[in-house]
Image 1: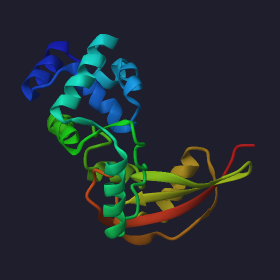
Image 2 (image 1 turned 120 degrees about the vertical axis):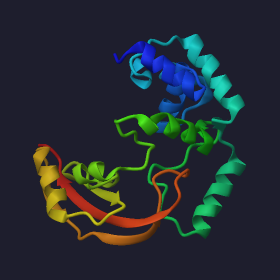
Image 3 (image 1 turned 45 degrees about the vertical axis):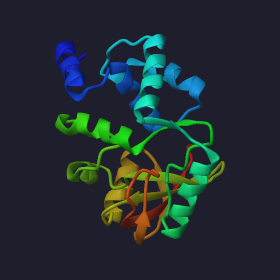
Image 4 (image 1 turned 90 degrees about the vertical axis):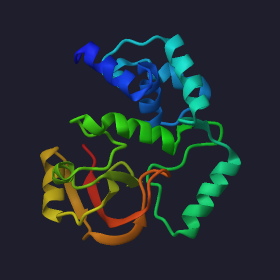
Length: 212
């Protein structure tokens, strides 16, 4: 665990509690029904190894809702987001939309996390990708297009044109057999989550053999 005093001082400096951080971090990855958010936030992996209790996380869920960092997804909200994405001809969000009734992190909640991580050397998934990250990971995110007993087909997305040789080498280094790969295709407007501003980028399809 990192220096506990230093971590707690950072939380205090940014004006929120460790349990609130855990709740926001966990829900930023996976929106969940209200009854499950606190239970899935207890794991210390979401809070720099600091131990948390269920009661602390339940209180944090309530406080994050009050502060507008979390919100309960409604049917009308979903319809509004879908209409906005369709009108803007946006590809995505690649991670999909939350379900009505689930709790998700708001844009202001993500901004709180980004400010907290501004002096953090580790890149978080909800922070803008760095050049060093892009050099190690050609795809920002992938989605499965097809899956059967013999193979799966993935589509990878990135902000910069991927190097096909680097992409294929990365798959092979993981012990995967690449059956085919498309050339990178430029796309004008895409987003990973509904909170992201659409931007241009590239996509590339890769077909991989399943282990026998």
